[in-house]
Length: 260
Image 1 (cartoon, rainbow, N blue to C red):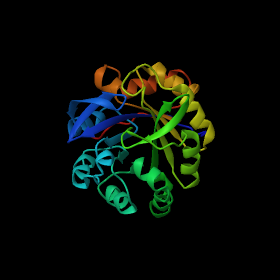
Image 2: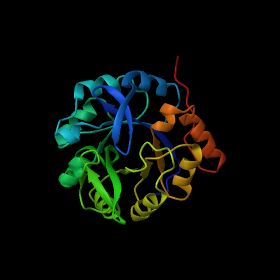
Image 3: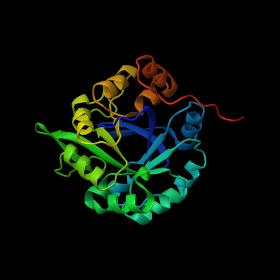
Image 4: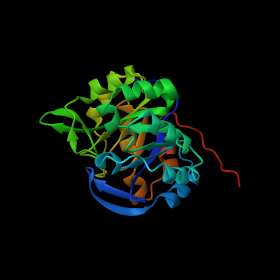
């Protein structure tokens, strides 16, 4: 379990055909806006980081759209993690050159675990986030790839341990059944993975309110919380989330003010 000092609240944007989309359980996608306006809003809301995931690239076997990512990154005034379609160290290099601070890798890492090792060696562990999407098969948790469509047969704990041993800097852990439901994170899943590794674990999938975030941290052992629907469909904000967590004794990052 990671024992860092500050907890991050990280909005997530799911990107398909330039637009921001949202669904439930990695399905039934509907457009909810555009990427650049969303990024500009988050610039004013004192977010700690932003995660952007191209939900189609890996499923379709496409490489990342580096030029569009560059356009997005030019609008970001905070750390920016990008995932979707990353299959090689050349992709990682191009993504970082396009303005991403970190890359999130799921399908490419499962298909070729050496990509984690090579990425960490060439660019630093701090740049490599291994994304682990999970749902149950019978009574057991399994890791899924290709936007939740293919069962890898791996357990999330074992895969997280391997990812850490290969140099991953963080784990982005998403419960597929909880995604978009806004009924709370999968605390048991978070507990299992957080207890298995020493690197930060970002909990994702299911946040409906600030208390859900608190539970993911205090009970699940997550180091950070990522969320999308709560910020798209309610009046709740990342700044209020940090204030709520701080009031409950969870250290969060300090506010900052953008220069005008």
